[in-house]
Length: 440
Ligand SMILES: [Zn+2]
Image (cartoon, rainbow, N blue to C red):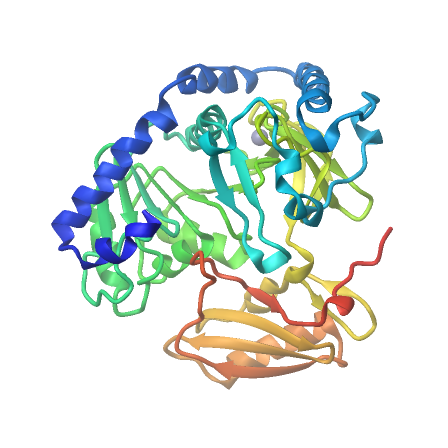
């Protein structure tokens, strides 16, 4: 839709709805035709297998992938077929420099679909994949929705960056209805305090089976209340604890978080028992000693990324889960290096959302670090905000960062999003040499 965005924005709402539905109808067969149903059933059956069986099947899939890659993908030609862990770690910059070398000679690049990673963490990268991979991806998404009691084609309300409402539109509707996928597509870009009640009214009228959104978008909606869906799903940004608490309270249901990446190499999903599972049928996840995630996607033959460093970190967890599925457990997914505050004594401090856990009158906040000895806390105040709230933040910051890091406050009307409409809680603007993680 990108190229016609200017034309789209100029249409009346009813014509925009037709355009949204035409796009959806075209996309529907790509998403849910072909082998979608078959894959969906396969993934469901995997959820009933034992961990041993899942890991054995994963090993088989890895062997097939390596055997394929050394024959068909220029970057891997001539590699030995030793076990996966002997392969060198693949950096994003390496792929970004020569993406064509990672494409399989069996596919015509012009017929592949593509996704783009953001340039916020180095050079942007275009990931190419065939339509079957697209269908596989959709099957994983709907299996996760099923974990919340809302199977394929349940009615969803999405607040996840769909650019369906012109940026300058001042009045509702800030959503468009997609009848093919039974989705209410809500704009993430119009969530101002004045507009929130209109969103809420639309959600209640539509009464979706589930809501799905950026954590920051659902969190904003939660400020004014919620509809009563069976489940809430979050993805695309780090889900912060205070966001989860607010969303679960307002919508009266559990939040199911999803971790994935544009490179299609890893999928970590939250189950009904509240645990995170890493799906072994999606990819191989290795964790280095400092938590660095090294990922191998198993479902994209056109552009296999093998032992790829995605830039995120995670902690493993031992044991089994009450939900009964055998996928290994993950304690938590940490953000990128850019999601940490660096202290003058060399520490990296994450989980900064705890600064706000006892603060009641903050609508949104963001932490910016430009120098090692100072953080800037940008706050959108809610009614009732006083110095006492700032004192809590300052106290909590001192406990985590020490006295060597000053805390400065900046009060703003709104916190700007990235180009993709995402919210970033921590923005590190330190020079790159100060952001290097110590190597294990
Ligand atoms: Zn579980």
